Image 1: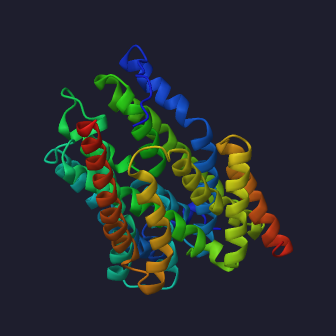
Image 2: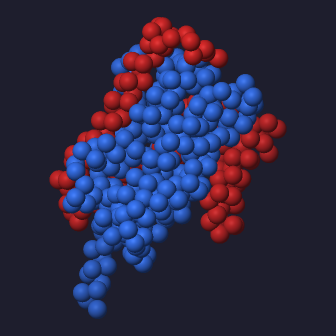
Image 3: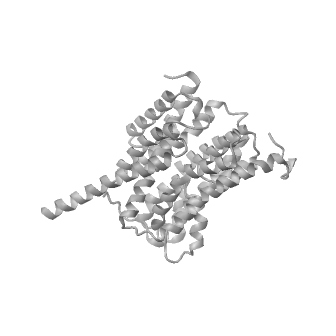
Length: 250
Length: 120
């Protein structure tokens, strides 16, 4: 494993501030643009600004938000919307399970994690997965909060700005804004490629995602995660075992 | 554009709330379940390593689906336009020694240009 040197911000307060600083760079620019695109999409759907803000407020994570709006626009049933969004957002379960050990500490009350889990989404998750293991335990959760709360606030603001823009913005620009998001996520994971087991899982997922979508647009992510993840897991475990055996025989 | 004075008790305001609420509830369910389950999974267990692989495969699957077979406004473009913009973005990213901002921006600009002018 490529190990980065441990980091220490010095205090819990500085951990909040550094989280905030990291969020106010590229993540804020990209998500801000993405949510302007989302705001524009909602106003084209004919809904009110409060609906756009409610969606960004309590259903934060762009793929599920777009799906909700698209399905609502074609008059899908309530059950169909709930089922589709649940399947799109099922990644949040393994993501939360994997993130929690890296942000938990002994003094924070459990209810705080339940509240903060509303802010677990790809950008903050990827940042916390990279930084938090390097930090002293008491600075990890503050770093995560310092990162995601400002980022979420920017998304709320951008949703409102985007809502009033579509008359002004040409359609191609809206497309560009919406496209920023998946391309940004892709590059974030390409940059993180060095961790063991990850390249296999990422590549298998990237291949299986669209293929299974052609078979079943609803179940594709669940199938992709289970099949791709399980194969990647077995490959990684076999490599680890082989390495241990090699060390033993030498 | 809607007027703020239209009030909160109109059907136009109330009808979408059910859809938005249902979406928010199922989304939060996964997050809360993740918090609840996480205390019971040992970080050094093979189960935890498996969940990690599943999470990464899911994320990659979602991102690649969002690019190649999107729902929403991007669906109006051809797959060759989106794939082309993605390749440009990756190439620029590596050419600029992994500069995220330039990589993402060039992909988006390439997409906007292709949407305006047609495929390169």
